[in-house]
Image (cartoon, rainbow, N blue to C red; front, side):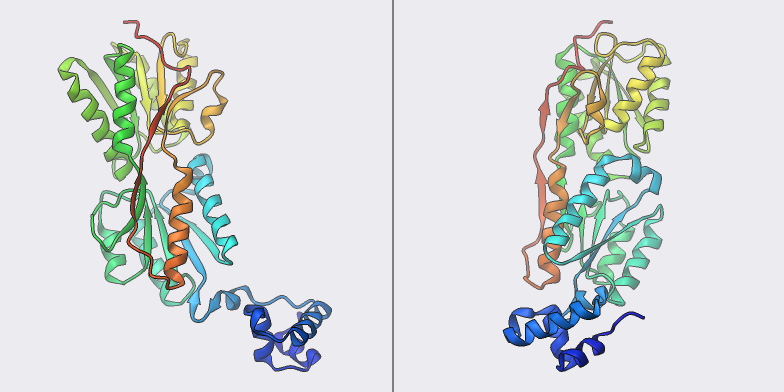
Length: 340
């Protein structure tokens, strides 16, 4: 049978409150008493209840991370792995715990998080990949749930804290780069239509296209940001009449899908097909040549969001967070001059 805090108190001949103070605030305990209690904890192999330790001064030192995708989508996309790993590391450094949730239903998840917050199981929430629909944000705001969004919110308000990369600039840079190589028929594999990420990339693509008039043929296809969807949508584009001579993908996992389709059709990258990705989360490293991509600094998103949420939970009253990270083009070897 596991030892309890009362067992430790009895062996150390101190009160239960003193044992609790040793666990949560050892700096406030007399050194001799501290040593005695720690010795009792070691002898009894006592392990404090994690949930109880996280409730310090009524502050719930736990944050939730919500990714509105299926478990399979989260496993495939290295963006989510990097994001969750960064947030978990920041939490660990501050004696916080991160709980990660995946779901396809934003509405059900929003209600679930309200329940967790009111039951003091989480002290705040980090949302990823916001929808262009504002329903879940309006609901969370109405319930006064502290949250931070990684991505641009569908509704702009001083009450909404967010950090994002400049996806409009990313789309613009990618298409402009292909245009400079002489490409006029360009495929564009975007993300889900309901995400602000996709809307921003689309806006950037349109911005670049408008600078060059009506001579461009840009064909946009929606994907669910998985390898299979990238592969199937690329096949459709590459089998079409007047196939594109270049493809821009929302991320590098989609780019891998494009390469798979190109290989199947006997098309070589970049001599037959130029390819540029909106990110490089790691999948781009499997290409035989260096992938041309947009560096979005997405690795910083989790760091910024987690540190801000920790300050909020600890009642340090941080300023409103509304940060957009700049992007830059990284030249690789997957783009070349167009051959009509």
